[in-house]
Image 1 (cartoon, one colour):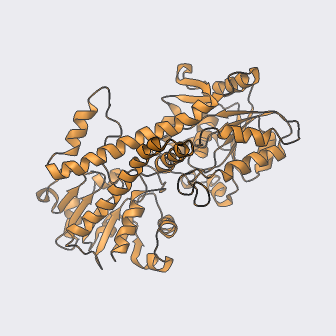
Image 2 (spheres, rainbow, N blue to C red; image 1 turned 120 degrees about the horizontal axis):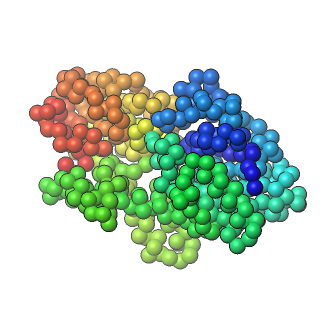
Image 3 (cartoon, rainbow, N blue to C red; image 1 turned 135 degrees about the vertical axis):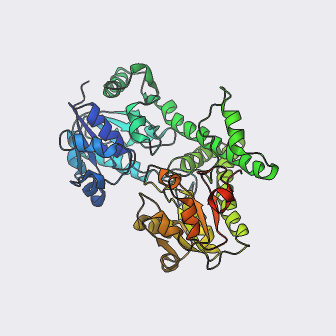
Length: 464
C-alpha cells in the first residue's frame, strides 16, 4: 500500500513536530496538519518560522524547509480527512476532571469526536493511527465507532505511540531508539496497514529499530514506559530527602547507582519533581486501569510515584518558607524557569506552578522569568490550577523579560527549570542587587555544590 497523503488531527506538541519530520524525510508524501484552534494554525503558518507555537531546537528549520512544499497546516479538517490515505489522531487526552474516573482516567472525548468526524467524512478505506497516549483497548472503541458508520468504508486501526522527550523531540524523531507500531497482526489487511506505516518510518529509521506488535501491547507499552521513567525520578527524589538528613550527596549517590549497568544513569537527576503532559497523566491512567480490574495492590504501587512527586514539590516550597524565617509574607521571590524542563515552552504540570501556588498561599510576591514562556501562559496556568482569584494572581505575580530583572531586590531565588542561560548568569552580580540576606534555592541542581563564598548566597539545593 503506497501512502501519498497523510492527515494529522492535532497541531500540538506531538502532532506538529512529528508531521514536520515525516514531511522532511518523505518529500513524496503530502502531510497536512489540522486543528480547530485557528490561532494555533495561524502561528504554524506565520511567515516568520521563529513564531511557530511549539519551541523545539531545530524544529523551525524543518518547518521552513517543508512548509508549503509537502507540509501544510489548516483548519479545514474535513478536507484533509477526505484526501488522506492515513490519518494520525494526535489530540489531547487529559486526565478526567468529572464523572467516573475523575482525577485518574484519561478523558477520551476528543478521541471519540475525531472518530465520529472521520466516520462521517470518509468515502474510501483509510488507515487510522493512534498517536495520542491512550489507555489499553482504546482501539476497540475507535473500531466500533468507525465500523458502524454505514458508509461501507473499511478502516484499519494502528497504535503508534510517541516516545519523545520535549526539548530533544526533533533528535528523538530523527534518531529514535525505537518506533513501535501495533496493529491487527492476524489478518492480511492488518498486516498490510502496518507495513504501510513501517515503510513511512523506514525512509529514515533502520528497520531493526521498528517494532511491530499487536495493538494492545503497543497501547500499554507507552503507559508502561512513562511509568518506569517517572518511577526513577520519584525514587531518586525520595533518596534526595534522605541525603539531606544524613549528609550524603544525592549527585554522588546517583552517579554510583547509575554506573551499575543493570540500572543506567538516565532519569536519576534529583529535582523538585517531574512535570510535563505525560508522566502524571499516564501513571494516573495506569492506576485507574489497575483499579478497574480489581488490582488494588498494583494501583497503590504506581500511585505512590505520584504521591512522592507531589511531596517533593511541597517540601521544596516549604523549605523556602522555613529558610526565610518561617514567613514569606510580602517578600519578593524570583522564580527562574516556568517550563517543566529546558528547551521547551511546554508548561503542563510544571513544578513551578505548584511551588508558586504554595508561595501565594503564604502571601509572597512572586516574579517569574522564563526564556520561552510568555506572561499570558504563566497567568493561564495559575488561573487554571490555583485556588486564588484571577485578580489576586495578577496583582501578586509579575512576569518579566530577564533573569536579572526578576532577581533585582528579591529576598530569594528559586531555580525551577534548568535553562542553560541560568548557568551563565553572573551570580555574584545578581547577589549584589538582591536584598540581604539573600537565598538561592536550586530545584534542578543547576549549580550543584556552590557555596556561599562562591556566589554570595545562602545556597540550598535538592539533596545537598
